[in-house]
Amino acid sequence: MDATRTTSEKKLTTKQTATEWHLPNTARMYDYYLGGTHNTEADRKAAGEVDSYAPFVGYVARLQRACLKDIPAELARRGFDLIIDFASGLPTQDHLHENAPEGVAVVYADLDPVIVEYSREILGNTPNVHYLYTDMRNPLTLLNESVVQQLLNEGRKPALVIWGICLFLSDEDIDTITNVLYDWAPNGTCLAFNVPLVDMNRNNEAVIKFLKTYEDLNEPIYVRSLEKVREIIHPWKPDERGFVSFLDWHGLGPSSMTPDDLDAVGPTGGGYAAYLVK
Image (cartoon, rainbow, N blue to C red; front, side, top):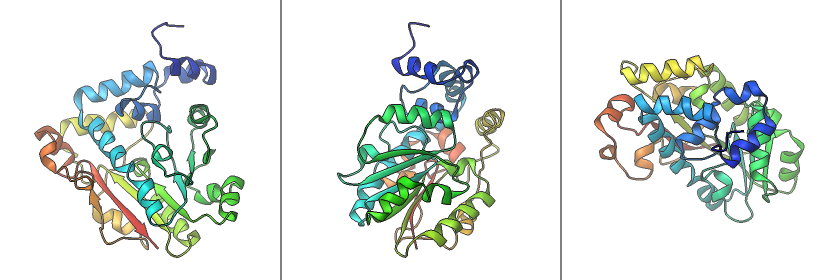
């Protein structure tokens, strides 16, 4: 084994086949964009290539994660003590459980069995944190898991999180998922919802290359308008703050972005987020 590989990479080789080792994985690429170490040489090569012509991707990823850091405390302030996160990716780099107040349980989930297995290894015996293998396109599968049912039977008040994954979901998928969750959720439930790359400039050369790269990875990216987002999440409604751009979430403003970034992703910082309520 190459001595320059990180400890995390050495652990990954015990969990993955040789084929998986040589293929980039979008969850680990995201970890790379965030500055993490839970990625492989294949991930770094693919993400580094994207970063070379589209540095806004890493910027948006880090800004999106900075917004996510606020969610556990805000949900706890609203009285929720169970956070159920659909399509979580790797639980690294200031993910939900790292910012959850004491006593708040976090349930992560993902469709990729390699990511699930590796995530469980990362988490170890972290209290009040669970990582399950489910496909969020059938959200009731996760909600009916015995671990989730046990937490609900304890009287915990659930909040839901869909953060970042809409990038890889069709309009039909999002419409189905949010409607199923609305029917399941008790009145007063909160859904922390994020939709990246809204109104991205599809005529921008870097954007064209970025979309082609992820299409080649068999992870096509969906770009949509905020108006379309509002339509497909109905009947959920944003709270009084409405949809807030990533930049406005922390009061940064578009001046924090380069002209090239602004041309690619517009003045929002790469998307919007909201606390949706039933």
